[in-house]
Image (cartoon, rainbow, N blue to C red; front, side):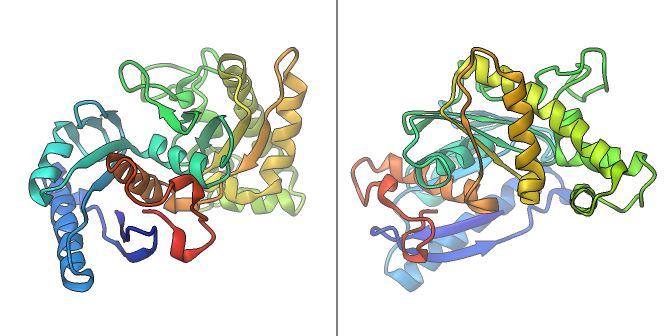
Length: 310
């Protein structure tokens, strides 16, 4: 869990991290979040003369932003948790609840790699793959909270089984965990991961190049589907796999370019905010609750520590 307190002028006042404690069960995770938030409130009172006036929180899984409910989170064991209401009751301030990837996308779109872009798609490549559809400074959640689930586009019909119940989903081929599995299956050290595979690609290992290209091809297939449906101006790629830099982006841009026909090719760029995007986005959600209070988030500079929103 990552959290921060931010001043009225956008200055970063305090940052903190805590383990989720998910090994102790879903109730422990919830209690940990509420306690963590209360600690931050107390820190604000003690060190800055008053509590925060609004809060934002981003969580994984299926999120109903309208009702403020964490509908389902497999990794946390949650079902229908009224998180916004519980947090608002604990803190006594307005609270905004968002999906972790969509919230990270909000930050990337407003103050990160998509800054100034009217239409973007943010795709983090981590344990799985999800997406955030950016439209004019906001992120689309869809009618039921499922918008952006690009990781479950079928790119290899009849292929590898996915926990979602389908076969051949994109995230079973192009996520960091999928590359790790494929690299191990290629006869490598079982302890090696996707980053090791990327380093082997850079050093010219042909087995690594084969594994990597298969992932890139699957990702390009999924992204072209998204381009056809959404027509984004910018594709922002983040997550652990994006840390490979041009080892990923050079072949990915080529693969997408080879697949488009009538579609307009978007800029394909790395995410700018790293693993702070979700926390920064939660701060933007909180700021949005305050309307015109404070500086315009689009005027903030994420490279300036005095202007980071969280």
